[in-house]
Image (cartoon, rainbow, N blue to C red; front, side, top):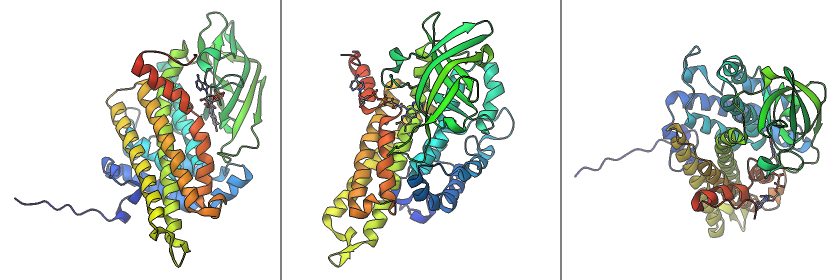
Length: 407
Ligand SMILES: Cc1cc2nc3c(=O)[nH]c(=O)nc-3n(C[C@H](O)[C@H](O)[C@H](O)COP(=O)(O)OP(=O)(O)OC[C@H]3O[C@@H](n4cnc5c(N)ncnc54)[C@H](O)[C@@H]3O)c2cc1C
């Protein structure tokens, strides 16, 4: 019997090295790896030096936006082929793109995903074929920037039943009244995808609202302690007039919104996994360099147990999102699948970032060590796109057939 000996590629040749313990990266093509490698170079060179400073100031480093867009990451021509007939980039590539961004910074990943995930999904799921033909190319090249405006001041988890922004038909126009909260990226968007309840039939509809339309007011949400670089807005809509042509014709009830959320939750599970990779790497770096009792921290048994636990969380999360993405590539989309991935990856993330912070001791609470940024930013990711409880209840409903949201 001959044993085939597989020579492992050196960690340096792989994009994700020790963060990708079971080599999920091998599912990527060479071309996909090349695009992701370009993203990596950009983030290392241009983004990383800015992060601590902009986080502390609570501002987004606007100078990164154009170069990030110019990297052509959403549907890179070299992965999709030229022309309108091109095939979309694969889900596994899209997932690793989010992973790479989040491994560097959660705000950068959230900023990119606001357009490439939330807004694009609103158009893909909610727009008619004619609207898609007109808008989608502009969504992909960011010449039409948009955000997803669903949450309201008085309704977060119970938005399906609680959504109270109203839409009233008036000839060829609609009149919108209400308020939206937490809307990420609104201050730099061209249009806000606003969900409102039609007063005539009580159903939820969606509208692309010009950010500068009369009656739209945006206020920055200040004093955040998490995702400080990402800008979130409180939006007031006071008699805002929107033409019927700007209504998303495929959104006729909350069911259509739920289909969007299903797709977006998977992206957040990739973000939670990327954050773990960033925190794990930062923690590992720290315990290799820092010495106590005359030895590197990494040589102590209790420190190694923490490292192993972090790697276990990260590897489990990465395996979960990779498998979910494979299922979705086969056309299997179920609410409970993305809810489970979002819930579980975020649980693991919370432990991983806390362990990373712990490994760095006092230095773990200053922005000089990356672990502090990951630790703080993880809290927003834990709560957005469905809290732990709401995602657990979606899974519970699928398991038992009983809806337990309001008991
Ligand atoms: C940084 C950030 C960015 C965001 N970006 C966007 C965006 O771009 N667009 C957008 O539309 N929204 C956005 N959101 C909103 C986000 O989706 C909501 O914050 C989230 O859905 C939770 O709603 P809530 O904050 O109102 O919490 P609440 O719904 O008030 O919940 C508070 C707590 O009560 C728990 N709870 C609620 N109901 C139940 C129940 N039935 N059983 C058990 N526990 C329950 C929740 O799990 C949570 O722990 C963002 C939020 C944040 C923090």
